[in-house]
Image (tube, rainbow, N blue to C red; front, side, top):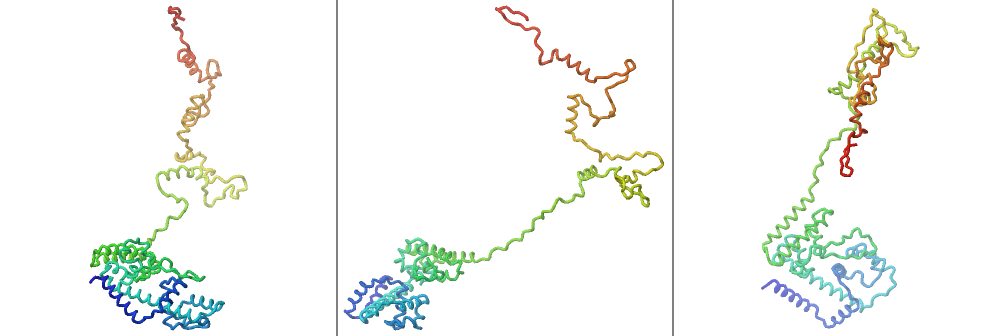
Amino acid sequence: MSLADELLADLEEAAEEEEENFVDEEDEPAIEDVQEEMQLDLTVDSVKSIAKLWDSKMELGNSLDKCKNNENVQQILTNATIMVVSVTASTTQGQQLTEEELERIEEACDMALELNQSKHRIYEYVESRMSFIAPNLSIIVGASTAAKIMGIAGGLTNLSKMPACNIMLLGAQRKTLSGFSSTSVLPHTGYIYHSDIVQSLPPDLRRKAARLVAAKCTLAARVDSFHESQDGKVGYDLKEEIERKFDKWQEPPPVKQVKPLPAPLDGQRKKRGGRRYRKMKERLGLTEIRKQANRMSFGEIEEDAYQEDLGFSLGHLGKSGSGRVRQTQVNEATKARISKTLQRTLQKQSMVYGGKSTIRDRSSGTASSVAFTPLQGLEIVNPQAAEKKVAEANQKYFSSMAEFVKVKSEKNGIMTNS
């Protein structure tokens, strides 16, 4: 006997028991009238609310006073719904229901309760058989959640054809807020979001986990629809993968590495060594003359100790000694220097313009072009005369303005010389 036959047999037995308990031919027209007049769309929440009202022996009944102040209603409805009912009962201008209308409503409640009981009975039966119908799916989300999403989808085959984004929304409820805050409402949350495997995570990871579980449920449903992996091996593998990802999400972040502070933005440090730097210090250092001028004798009054005259005293440089002139030692490192580029520039200028400089020259700076000769006495010598004479001689043959002396030309077929 197959599972479908067992399910049909159980439903037939339940239907026979209900017919024995509720055998009344006059009830059918009343139910039809209620369906025509009210046309109610009974959702899961409304069915549960009606069931609670019926179990509490119709606490509200047909009295408005019970709607305003009733302690038992707080155990059945939420605070927001109680406030809406109380305000509506206080401001309503309608009339009380007649006995006939109240009986129809009670019959509608009975019908809703019977439907709710039948639905739960089917869910319980499918849940007990989920290990045979969809073993891989029930391993991931549990038998209860698997039975609910299969019931809403319309079977395992229809569930296997649905994408993961739609499976995640199975069982989502639209609540009427009646003007209240929507902070406590969780939109786009279905049975998978409220399953145990998702609710075990922190609230900030539940939506992400619901998407992951819905994707794995889609794969498991497709495996079960083809009746493969009846031992649930695929379901165990998918659940282990989900748990590994959950553990990875909840791992603490890595310890931040302590990086050393960058070097402070200080100025240029003082250099105390190096061959180039020592040469620069020697070149820019004090000369021997300046050192002698700065040096003072101990216990002797200088000529200008109070600096009343212009300038300062010359120190040891101005002292009178034995009368001999001592030549001051000159350090070659402190002498004024001239760059090689400037030397080449001055050399070119001296060659072009005939000028002469005493820089880097061994001759004295008092040399002149005026010479004394025994013949004519005072004679002015032109040092450029010889160069000018050579230039005039070269202009005859090497000048750019020179012309050919003999040029052959052809006139009337006869060669002539010009």
